[in-house]
Length: 456
Image 1 (cartoon, one colour):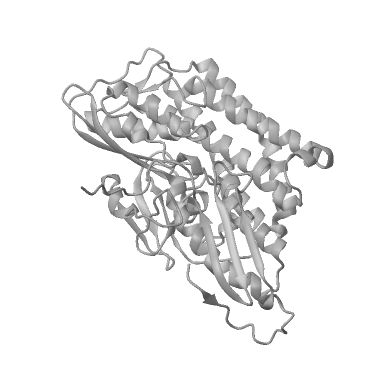
Image 2 (image 1 turned 90 degrees about the horizontal axis):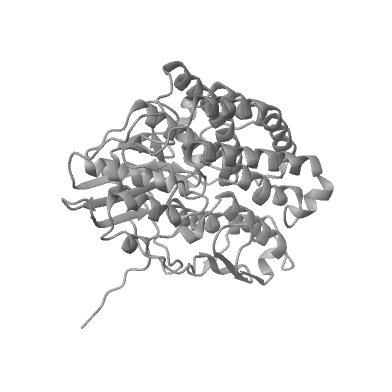
């Protein structure tokens, strides 16, 4: 970012904040996954640097899948992320099945939807309680809360365990699931297992209600900041956009545009920024946001009624342009996931669970596209297979990469506001750190690196 003079602060004295030298150099930000730096240099009221930097090294997952059989791909790409492993698995399976002409059964689809809700719930609880709550309660990590808020920490651990068991019952394990395969499932959960899962979720309602009380109590500590931006996420006619649907783009004027998943490259428009090893993205505007806040802004009407009640209780309204509210949006999604999963289980039990169901076989080989929402936002996978079912190449666009440009734009707006409000260096650093953490970034999941041109 170039030199930028702060405006509208001339009424302050020379002792005012705009005359101070502020140097913030956070290497690396804590309570996020991966490495990200915050660098802000202000000299006598002039912003010399205001940067969200991504120094992560490339991981070459798209190279790993080349030449591998379609039956292996989802197991490889699930390793892109240990938190969003389910989402990568499902997006990969959808892309592979699209390329192979495979249509899965209604039972398999419902089970995958339940699994997607399990991952979102599990990850959101981790983020809200263990990564964001310390900021809102004025401590450096979750460990001091064990002494000061023991009951709250116990609730967090119980809900985190629920999320883990929720996914494990269906997929064998939540980290790098084993039972989701092309064409369906290698093993179907029994009716007994589904009934047990339903009861576990029902038993968690009191903890969810207590979480709402906690969030209401700390909501005044959420920074009041807005910046209008574009929001992108799935729109699903069947349900709230998580597992499936078309790409939706919501612009600040409230207009929603829809696109086929196969057109995702024209939405993401990846480009290289000197601030980041991971590629930036942009669509209608210079940046856009993905994640829970984007999804709720786009899909609020599709939320379960209990989730809407939660939103009203906490004072959440759409359209919301405050990125700090992403954590609140995550909790609203947790409530939605819990109640919608109970409904899905009842649907399966009413139909009758067929544990003998076999995966659907390929009918062709070619290029396919898949998208699903992971906790941090919309995810895209694309593969091409030869006539023997081996991968000729692939492409993955990760949610956190899509948020980096938006974080940078937030920085560029909020730093002048903080200076005008006469915030000191520590306050500015904390506010920017909280802003990044609100996005729940998973920085290490970068699949794309800098463009490299070899010249002879």
